[in-house]
Length: 446
Image (tube, rainbow, N blue to C red; front, side):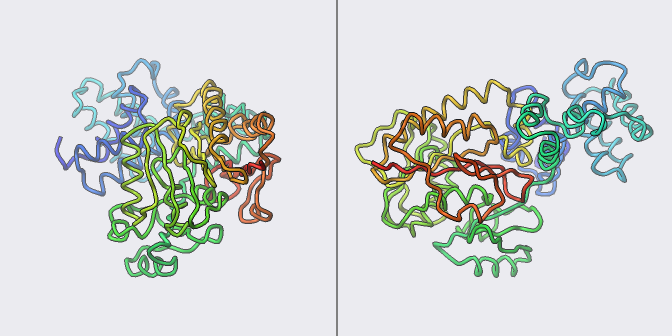
């Protein structure tokens, strides 16, 4: 394969990597893009096919099971994933039906499965003929089965959400998770104002508008490649969702303070904290893996930030000889609040992950408490919707650390559409355009 590799070839490679090696979609695609250096148009096509297929995977597999005379699992992985990506394309672009079928047959032959090209052709043409006759569970009669199959979410997660929020809110959640995530950037106010960045984007014919929720936030109207523009290289912005930006505002770091970010990679929140501190003071940014701390430093350098010191360490074992004014713990989590942005997560996660991650989060929180000055602030956040990782985690922490209180600034929640819980703020993705997030602020009172 050369740099004229097609988007469908790339998508097939990524889908195989995700299924066979449990790879994450973004990492797999980035590796393939780096390896083959495809044209931008093909990169875009591959990304759309992979994320679209994963977003609708249970639906696609159910449709294929109705069209095949054998079990889908009995097919070679290459053929299974050619059929999946082709069905997704037929769903997304029905007007291109026969072209999609022909490309799938070519892809089958190219991968040396010519003997199965007739099966691929027959199944896909059968879909075009029978798609309106295929049977799917109706929401009114079988709500859980409908959400599992039609909205392609694992049954354990649907049942968990139904138990917590009921059928209707869960339905809104799974619908939202299958929408395309908005594209938001954070102005680097150390270099220019939001108004100046908007003017630059306008001159570059990039349609964008300011968001009311966060003063640095800008929404790009149409998703596009924004990490290779001159503005990106100049450090004018960082690609980041609004919910993620709110976390730094909740910590409210002040110029000159001593701050620690205990799970900092890739550096989005760390660099935002530095902006709010006007690049004065000191931020200690930790991650367990060297390549991730390198990424934090690269982002800081691009944005012109000089107050971040990176450390490669397990934050549970890190014992500096100083205490901090503020600590951010954006903890590792199941990621169930960002399923529309990361659709592969829903197929990677299992119920046991909630318990295992909650244990890790508790250990991180307990150690963070020992690093804070009296009167210091500790912000805990996750991009999870699960209570064990959020409000139950904070209830446990408060019961074990009576020298801490929950202290969210008055009126802070007025900035966003969220659920105000006793333990913190929970943003559900269906309530607005921001990602699902939990955040709270704890203050050490003595």
